[in-house]
Length: 70
Image (cartoon, rainbow, N blue to C red; front, side, top):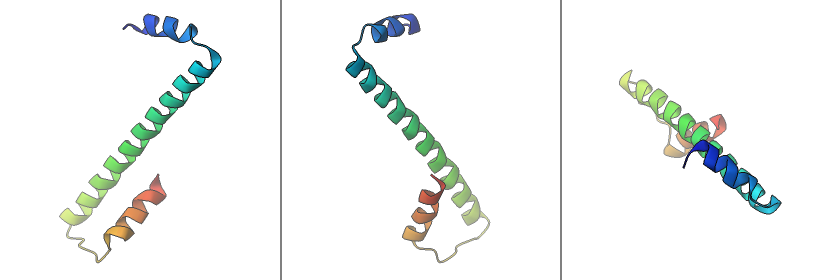
């Protein structure tokens, strides 16, 4: 489906359907941002380990650090 076809389909939706599409697209954006942040975090953590930083952080500590970035 081309972008023009998608636009045409969206304009034919009723208001409730348009809202559903908007919410779906917002969720995709949020997931992409979260995945990008997770990737950045994992790369940073890997770099720490490669430098020999084997701190005694628990998985919960590390996950809490990631959640604070999101």
